[in-house]
Picture 1 (cartoon, rainbow, N blue to C red):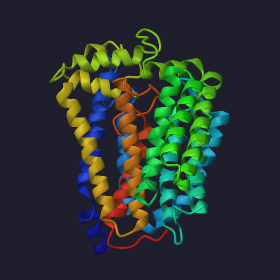
Picture 2 (tube, rainbow, N blue to C red):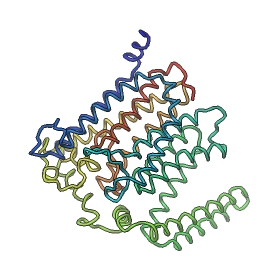
Picture 3 (spheres, rainbow, N blue to C red):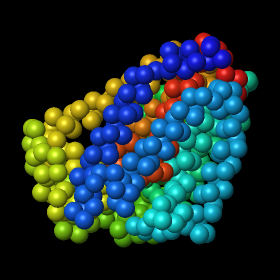
Length: 424
């Protein structure tokens, strides 16, 4: 018992705990400003979103303490069950889910509270991925292992895509960084970058025949230059076929599958359209809010864009524009600095683990937090499509906050036990 107490108080990474509490507090106060109701001015009033967020924070703290008191082996053993439960919830939400903003992604719990299964699926997938990849005789370079890993990540992605929740679906793609750390060839990252480039070119110029023709010409040049290297020629031909198929599929999906509002969001980012009053209204108002904050901001609850609700979804997806407007460039740098410090700390913690399970899980946590921060802040300043994704621990929402609490504190617990080995 004394040893357990010693581990709890002295082996816990208090740096990550402090950053967690700091981000939760920043989020709570900014939600109070963004969603302020003069009829319910108290920040603890549970009839308001900021009052509910306080409840979520308390629940998160209780969950964090509970996780720290659990055995690390028990956490690893729970992975398959949690994955199955969240997968079932993702199926249930497709049948009885509550639709908001075109996405059928929430299960109503009554009393104004809702559950978003896709948030918890990120945690359970990260946990199961770590358990499987840390198993014996699992080699990521082998086809069987790679396909199993792809299935673990891809199954919840497919269910979430059916909602359809594009933002949450993209989050799972960030787990490729975990695979890269564990031995996946860096060529996969290069290929991912090339496919993103082909995607943008296909959408922007809307000429798949021209792009495929350019690919064929490039392939012919490489083949002529290196015709004696049969392996390289074969690789180029295979790459050409895959790239051509990708371009044609992107064009088909863009023209035949995507809805108009989804096309409009993509068009705004790649520069095809500039609609500041229609689909681009949110992003345009967000830019105005962030820019109006200048260096030091307009002050707490003094932002005009925030005060008069010019930016839709300002307490959730666009919460960062409240930070920029009221706390200025300086406040924005503090928030970004906290996220950067947290990510660097997670990577540092990952590399000091003796257990492959803990290391893989840590990189999964870092990948999920990174993609959330990148996409959320990117869409508020207009460099990525507005696809609806929360800012970790700052945006309003119980499912999101509890998910990130679980992600982070399971890592803190595993790290506190790093001198032992966690068997998956």
